[in-house]
Image (cartoon, rainbow, N blue to C red; front, side):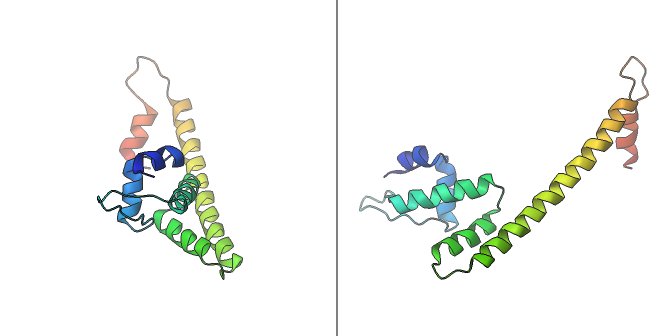
Length: 129
């Protein structure tokens, strides 16, 4: 398969596929003309990476997951530990977003939103508190 077909089938842009090749996540062989010749295994890896990235795993976490996936003697505890660490990171981000939302909601409610120049939103941003 060429990169266009793999892009269509994996749902990833060709640019992303080239990037994954550049950083060694996929290594498709080259035809005699120098073009990439993707195999079904490469397509499977790209779909795996797309799903992992959609779940928010970083490139390095994806590299670790791919290594674990390809290691038939892996311990599922290693996979679970990586996923638990990522889940904790997501929980931290959710807590931060909820805090941001609460602060902004309070500021929006305090702002009159009329022709007056005073604005608690701008005042808070200027004070950095």
